[in-house]
Amino acid sequence: MKDRQRKTSPRPSVADFLAEAIFSGRYQPGDFVPKEVDLCEQFAINRSAVRSDLRQLVDVGIIERISGHGSKVREYAEWNILDPQVTDWMTRYATPNPRIQQEILSFRLDVEPYVAMTAAKRATARDLVAIEEAFEGMGQNLHGDDGQDGRLHSDFDVAFHVAIFKATHNIVWAQLSHILRPSIYMLIETSNVSASDPEESLERHRQLMECIRARQPREAFLAAQAVLKGTADALGIEPGDSALGRQLTFN
Image 1: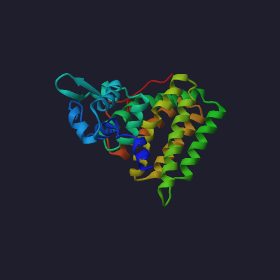
Image 2 (image 1 turned 90 degrees about the horizontal axis):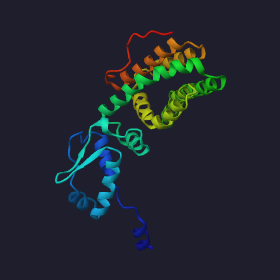
Image 3 (image 1 turned 180 degrees about the vertical axis):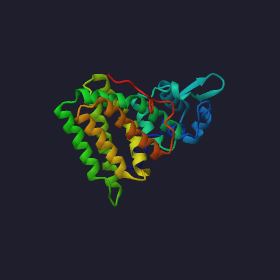
Image 4 (image 1 turned 90 degrees about the vertical axis):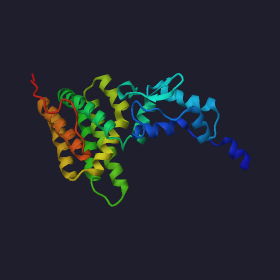
C-alpha cells in the first residue's frame, strides 16, 4: 500500500517553486534563476521534468532561456499577466512584492474610474441590486473576531467591483473583470488587513455606489478614484503614473 501511495504522489513543482520566488521578489527582472542541474539535484527529479516546468514559465513570458547561460527573469512588461496561470501565481505569491502591487494598482487607477463612469450611464436595476448586495455584505462582515469575517469582507469587496464592471454592459469589461479578479482580490485582501479606518473605506464604497445609482458619471469617476486612493494609502505604496488626480473634461 505504501509503495502504491509513493508511486501516485505528485512530484514537486519546480514551476511553482520558481513562481513563488519570482512573484515574491526574491528573483528580480534580470536575475538568473538556478540552473537545471541544480534544480534536478534540489528536487530529486530528472532533467526533462525540470525543463517541462521551466517551459511553463517561458510560455507565459516570465523567464527566457539564454543558450549557454541559463534562465533569466524577464521584465514585468513582458509577462502575460492575464494568463490564468499567471494570475493564480500572482494571487498566491505576489503579496510581499510592492512593485507588483504598484503595477496592478496603477492599472486599476487608469481603468476603474472610467468603468465606474460607464456604469453610472448604463447600469440596470438588476446591476444596482448586485452592487448593493455586495456592499451590504461588506458592511455585515466589516468587523469580526476571527479571519472568517475578514475573508468574507474581502470576497464581498471583490464582488462589489466586479458588479461595477458588469454594469458597463460591455462584453470586454465584463470578461476582463473575471480575468482580473485574482489580482484585484490580492490588493483588496492586503489593504483591508492594513486599513487603519475600515469605516472610512466602507463609506467611500457607499459614495461610489450612490453616484452610480444617481446616474452621475463624473461623480462616479471621482468616487472610484477616492476608493483606489484609499487602497494605495492602506498598502503604503505610491500609485505611480496613473489617471489619479488628472483634470478631466466630462460631457
